[in-house]
Length: 273
Image 1 (cartoon, rainbow, N blue to C red):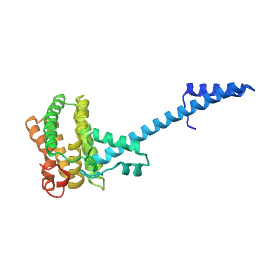
Image 2: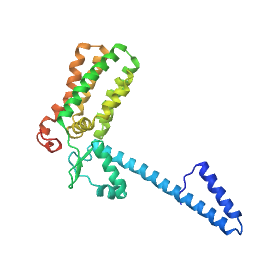
Image 3: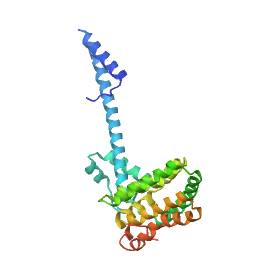
Image 4: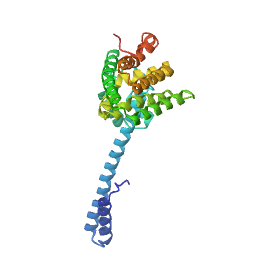
């Protein structure tokens, strides 16, 4: 039987067992203490199972979220409660709860009485996300250029070097994506605007998957790396007049690289306009 291992619970059950043992021939007292002892165990067992189920459900949700965001589950791909049950070895109840959470966060959508599928990409939202990032990142980079922070420049150079080394060997696209995110995060962190970055990341259900599509499918890592190099040069030289152009070009480049695929090979990943 499973018991929550806290001091108060262990002390209570230990006392109950001792009293049960010392009750001698008093049958009624023995029954009372036995009932208290076993009931406490059952209650704690149920609580423990509920906590275990909750923690397990959270892990499954996070795993599915990552798989959706990293395009292991493609936009439009059907996902069912039964599939979650079989894949993760859980019952219908936690599977249903996980599906509900995926719907509430916008990761999946349902057709009543039919099926649930991974949310399609919305090109309008993607373009607005890019517009938002251009406006914010230009401002944040200007702030860090004014600060002339040598430590920040060293961190940028270090990240850039990691990108360069990665491109020299065989690697997973997700590895480059992580370095790309960290690169952009650096100027938010250096200007103490990390909350802004976190809010941007939270609102990226469509744009992040679009970026992953660019990285995973197009695989033009060299072009992204060259943009990053140019941004670092502009920051180091404080070339304010060139900043707007390179940030706009860089953040719009994914649309240009994917343009032919959006209307062709990946057309079914997007909402029809």
